[in-house]
Amino acid sequence: MKPLVTVVVPVYNVAPYLPDCIESLLAQTLQPMELIFVDDASTDNSLAVLQDYEARYPDRMRVIASTENHKQGGARNVGLRQAKADWVGWIDSDDFVTPDFYKTLYTQVQDTGADVAFLQYAAVPHDAHPGTVDPAALTPLIRWDDWLLRWNGQDLTDEGRMDLICCPIGGLVCGLWRKSLLTDHDLWFPADVRYEDNYWGPIAKVYLQRAAFVPRVGYLYRQVAASTTHKRNQPYIRDRMTMERATLQKADELGLRDRYHDAWEYLYGWRYCVNTVQTYLRSYDEIPFDTIDALVAEVDAAFPHWQQNRYYCHLVPEAQRAENARQVYHTRQWVRDRDAAAQKQRRAEARARLWDKGCRTVKKLLHISTQP
Image 1 (cartoon, rainbow, N blue to C red):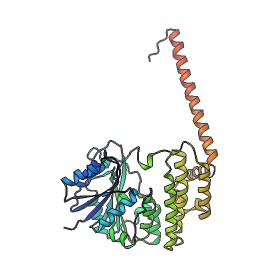
Image 2 (image 1 turned 135 degrees about the vertical axis):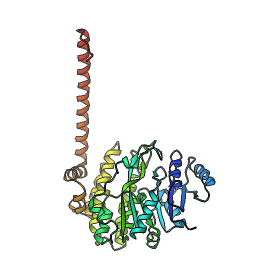
Image 3 (image 1 turned 180 degrees about the vertical axis):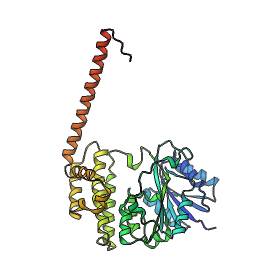
Image 4 (image 1 turned 90 degrees about the horizontal axis):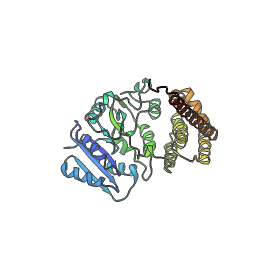
């Protein structure tokens, strides 16, 4: 029997968390489903874990072992090419989903005729497991406002597609996608690079005719310190810059830069410039000022008025926009101010500790009880 949904799971060195991901997919209430796990040349025992499950559930999951590592994008492409269902979902191999996740999404696309349906996602601790958390009690990492939900189940105009590109929805893993939409438009993922979803998501959304949203949590995003988004001083932050440039280049190739100008301007200014600068400031011990200066100059040349972009002004509070501008255009002074404030705080804490120690010493000498 042809599966209703294919779920593609790229896997790389996540052996401790992999069973939770697999078990959550095997527990899905929607059937029949096809589960494709693509091991991206893991160096731990992830492949052995996958093969053990495949031996136990040969009719429900398939393991593809790649001999070379091509990052998540390459692994997703392998799975997409093998998918048999008309609908495709993605899940990161260290995360897990609620039992009704794909049934809910599949019901939505069938009822609304949408090309994609989304559920919300929430963060869970690294030691969380399926069945140990109550999704209804979790706060979504991204709250959907009426500005986005007005397009729920509606035919999308160019305005609607730009809204979907710019509004925070969640990663591609939060959605169920019509396979023909992807294959008919050659929506393959960039391989051998990280942040491939930053490129894929906006390009895919320009082809949507309709989208659906279910405003409740179904995807559980595990907080793993070793993940791409949590590491420090990593050179692959440049991959984010590469992907944002590639997105704009693709828009030019498709002749869509002017048609969706406000969307590309928002992404280039906010995600490419501001977010990248903030990542350098948060995650680097030595700030690469020259790289930041070149990045800012590049963005200003492409979109000189990005700070007045209507999506940016709508989605980001004014005070935060002002702080973003200070970080972007006065990075060196911002770092000096931050370090000075931290040093001042350390001195104040040291004085407080010294004062407390002095008070306790005096009380002891005077035989005054230090008990309340």
